[in-house]
Length: 177
Figure 1 (cartoon, rainbow, N blue to C red):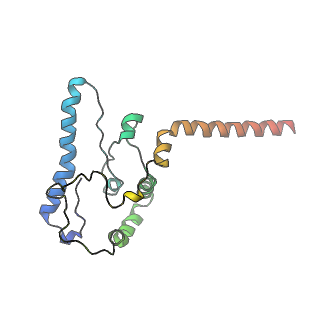
Figure 2 (cartoon, rainbow, N blue to C red):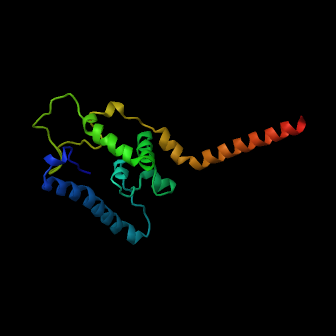
């Protein structure tokens, strides 16, 4: 994925075009490459990872590793994603106003911008950054939300049994009295 983080009035048509080429066509080319290997084998799963921003932009959600291995079309991996998706479903207008008034400024730092810093809009940034960066110290190795998503049927069965047991106990207690 590529993006331009700037006010729309400061973003050129060429920058918008490049973001679409890398992000949208990246999914297209990646899917086609996967299909070339999957079709002869007649098996496989295409995994495409998206963000909660996709919901804000009214795009269909993309599949993840968890969805590929645990069924379903999508898996909400972390709590902030759940909040964004549910919030968008419940009060999209309110989220529009909040993001318009706070979204851009909330993602700014007090640090001066390095005019010579590399970016990856037109070319890959040198080095092996992968998914690492300045926020590594905030990353977690696991997610309670992902665990719940993977075990939702088991959790639902446990809740149903607990409620059923509580209801049965109440009936027993009432009948004894």
